[in-house]
Length: 418
Figure: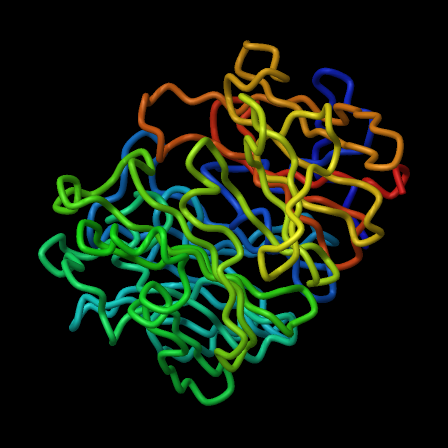
């Protein structure tokens, strides 16, 4: 990867690895999530979203800018605008099969429904199709998503804004909503598996009485890095809260299902009982054979937990190490990288958070970067999560932060730690 010397280096709190700010100009920028690289397949370009404002939630129809940064030239270009965004994951920007394919959400003005935009950011050619996008398959041919406009029923900040009256309440399990699969070659979109199928047939019998008192919605949908399995999270909102748009993620029942890309071999990897104490941010391991997550497991504090893709063999990754933030394994399986939320035990309490580099063989931990992510809005959905995400070479990590009061995207070179 060629990184222009014109990008400013981040040097506060003496980081132990090289760190550059890739969005040094206007700011208000964020990359997508900890499970998706914002760097293009060649490694030359960064895709990020520039918010129109930072200190309030978006309203229907307000547009943000899709920005492409050239890492070799240290230049940035606004390549599109979109109304299909919220504050935590932006417009779900994903690179496709090449540097000529950038995918993200927008909203069709005529129907007020989410759509996928497939854009060539170099010549401006674009197509619009489907129901929106959450994550692209490793080969760039397929996209997954739940009903993005309904995500606000369980947690605001992650989906697409449409008028409230167009976001139905699922008083009954739907046959026509669930996990959708879109071909990025043809634009054809189909329902892969319904919420009714998942909840009626694949949750434990002991939890089925709750079906009558909860409304269920899809949320995260992810590809295994190997492309041969899918993860889909489903949330059940208790009826007393079902009419509201949820600002804090609870109280709810949480389920995580895995399956083959054709919808077969469905397994409930984690059920509501397992998440009762505490847990979040489940993700595929690089080999696609297991899942990693934060979970209280058998203690009063979050731990780093791993299980097989079918939910079996749940175990602690390190018995004495606390979990935090958004944990991901490195491709070599030895190291784990994660960030922190404000107020977690390993933070300094001054608005800064560390990027934690953990050796799973020795148990040693190093805080390789410490950086400010504080915000003053008091609104959870406006928080600044680093969301550290590996590039395709597994040497570099992109992350969000705000050391000077505005959101920016940074890049850290971890090759010296490998």
